Length: 134
Image (cartoon, rainbow, N blue to C red; front, side):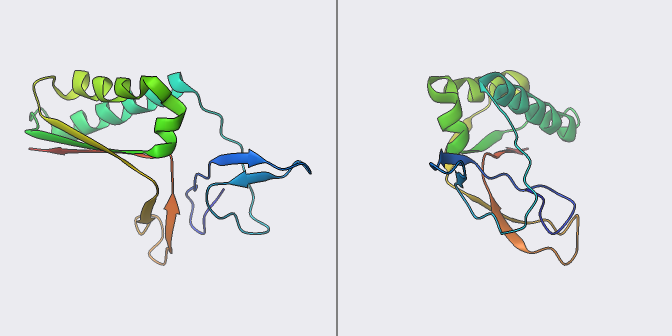
């Protein structure tokens, strides 16, 4: 679903009604254009890997002293028993001896002011946040 700015908001489908309409985890406004995004365990872990590499690049060769990971409960539901792999992927890329703390969140709140200075505060889900503290 495209937000008021040039970004996209992710809404997880949680069910299907008898008339064929879809039930989403969060609001979808009437008239919004919706795109179906398909994901699986492999693509989810690939996205984790890409995010960890971005963090490593941003660190510019500095090793973090602590890693905090916030992963959406929807990612947890998608990964199932493979959810621990997400943390292993991050540890492998950022350093296996670095303390890593993780938690799951139900919904993330953000304001995309970097895309639009008048952006509204929105919620989204299925996100992964990696905070590496140097």
